[in-house]
Every structure is written in C-alpha cells, then in structure tokens.
Amino acid sequence: MALEYRVRGTIGTEELNALISSSWEQPWAGNWSAILARSLTWVTAHEDGRLVGFAHVAWDGGAHAFLLDPTVHPSMRRMGVGTSLVRRAAQAARDSGAEWLHVDYEPQLEEFYTRCGFKLTKAGLLRLSSGT
Image (cartoon, rainbow, N blue to C red; front, side, top):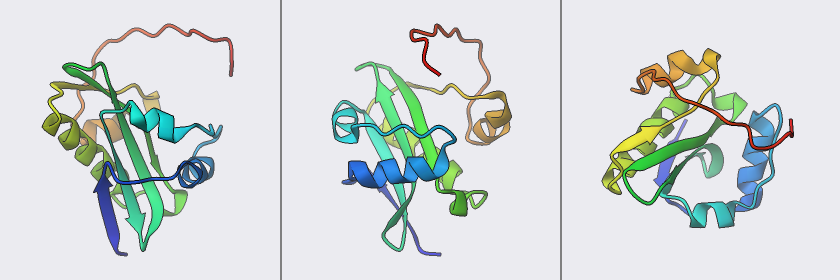
C-alpha cells in the first residue's frame, strides 16, 4: 500500500463528494471549492493516486481551528489512515498559527479522538435547522 498525504493539495469537488458518498451514511454533496477557499487547511490521503481520506480544518481567523469532515474510504479503515489525517491536520493548523483545535464527535468516536490527542471537554450545541 503506497499512501501519500498532501496538505492543501488540489482536490476536485466530484472526487471529494465520491469519497464522502462511499463513507457516510447520509452523504452530503458540497461545493468543496467554495468551502476550501475559506478553510485554514485540509489534508488528503491517496493510495496510488486515488483519494482515500480527507480531513478539513475551518477556523475563526484567529486562535481557534475546527476539525471537520474527517473521512476515510471504507476499504482503508482501521489501518491508521484516519489517525494520520487528523494528526497531520492538527500539525498544519499549528503551523498556520492556530492555538486550539476543536472537534465535535459522536460518543462511539471518543476512543479514536482520544488516540489522536484530543481531551474531552464540555461544549454546547444549538441546532439551527430542522433538517435531518
């Protein structure tokens, strides 16, 4: 397995939407060129040129960055790709001047994020839409 990681590499919307569709129970087809244009950074993982992983970091323009959308193709899970993506995204955010990296996750992912170095904190959440 020849994995290549890229920080802020060129990535196509169709390619990224295909990865997300293969990975998420409720896929979301986004306009990634517009999203990434406003992002602090992102990291992709490629196996023999094929996109197999993605992690996105948004930010507030200052000290706080937010890990969003970490995604690994189902065929590549449990091989360390997700952990490597998150750690590389954290380093890229640090290198860009962010002081804090926040992440929200479902309870079953706590062990994964703990392995990535995150500490459990209290946070609040306000749902702004009535969608599913």
